[in-house]
Image 1 (cartoon, helix red, strand yellow):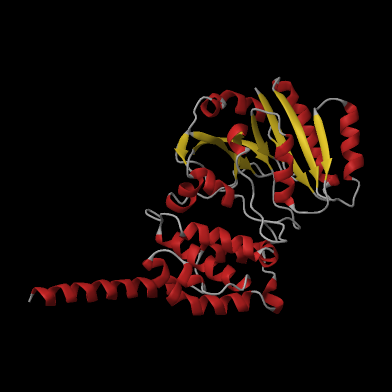
Image 2: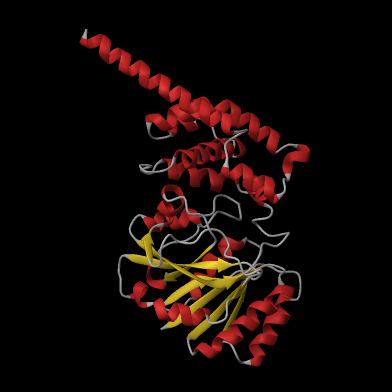
Length: 344
């Protein structure tokens, strides 16, 4: 078995050493692996730093460089060079936990010997030792990424170790001249035919950097609206049976948000499902006003605490959720009344 570790990087020379050192330590596991690096047009000394690692001859490193096209394109391009049986991404500001490759090897048969599984999902650990987000409800939890978040309401930082044969059939879809899209857009398409197996062991360590994608998510949204619009539209086309109400509200909120940012018209008309159309219709005005407020002037860049709180809630406050439930109850009573009148 061979593992390919993919690292897209842009002006992260100062952080690469920690990742490199973690790979050196993991050579003690005796696992055959390669480290594939895609330099996304860095202007710092990334190339010099990586060449120094290559000359040391400890880790099998392959270094590539592209014009600045963004993280997701960098990963797409790296997949062309993967030679491992399995592969996963480790960002340049993260690093492997000690014994990570041993943990993967101990569980790899669950992936390679099951044609219905496309990835093993491991946990990610923060620098302070705490797990980033939720754990799986049980070890070897079989599910898919869509169900995990939208039906089971488990939200964490997961490291997906893919079966290369399946992973190469998919890619991150970037719209127009944008540079970023959530990984989940690709995951949800892989979910249609395959499962993941969740394992409650951490194999990566890292915190969010101040200038990273996650810390600056509002800016990322504004710069990549079309890709996110397509992502949420694709979700609303799926079977949402079993999706929790608060998660549906999250979907409607973000669909409206990105419809406005991407300046898309007739989006409600094109949406599948009467209930989806109804919900989008009553939420459209408050959602549009919230979008304008959020992406204007001083409100353009919120801190991560505000962003996290808003992402888990609804446009404005929980009051809207109560109002929607009230409307639903009224509709049910109205329908029930009509049925009773017909019987008479």
